[in-house]
Each structure stands twice: as C-alpha cells, then as structure tokens.
Picture (cartoon, rainbow, N blue to C red):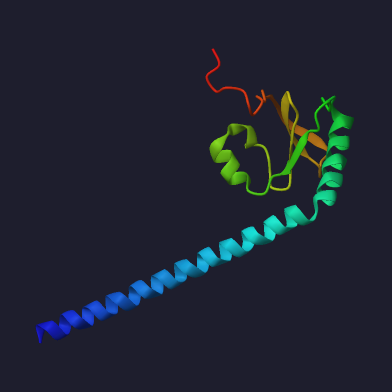
Length: 134
C-alpha cells in the first residue's frame, strides 16, 4: 500500500515537473523568436537605420552643437526600466526616446517634445588600447 502511494506521488511530481519544463521551454522559444525578429529588423534595414539616425542627428544639431567628426551612434530606448536600474542618467528618459553618442557626449533626446533631456560627458577609448595603460 505504501509503495503504491509513493509511486503515485512520484508520478504526480513527474507530471508537474514536465509541465513546468514545458512552460519554461515555450517562454524561451518565444524570447528566441522575438530576438530573431529584432535581429532581422536590424540587419535588414541598415539603409533605413542610417537614414533614421541621420534624421535624429539633424534634429539634435538644431538644439545643440555636436561633434560629427566621427559618425554619432543613435539608439532608440526600448526598455527604459532596465537602463534606469543600471544608470541614473536614464531616470528622465522614456521608451521611444533616443540616445545619441558622440566621441565626447551621450545625449538623451525626446523627439516627441523636441527637447534634449540630458547630456553627460563620455570618453570613448579605442578598442586596441590596453586596459591597464600606465
């Protein structure tokens, strides 16, 4: 009688474990699908991305002078909560705002209101510079 109860408990536990693993697998599969779609969008629209970046740079240049000797990097903020956890610079930003990074500054830009939200100095080091240069 006791072994039958243990077997029943083991079977129920196994069914619950399989169900939990299936839910997890589906969640990971959905994340992978979303990442794949994002990657395809980024890779497929490089000309569109460059035009969009140039449009944002032009708008920011109307509000402040920026160094364009090196092409600024433009990124759309898509998950501001994660960014806020990592850096207070993003506290005033919202999803859909833009981050423009030049060799000397990082600029948060709100296109909807056409305002510069915040600016901080940055120092971009070359990739081949040694980490512990003395």
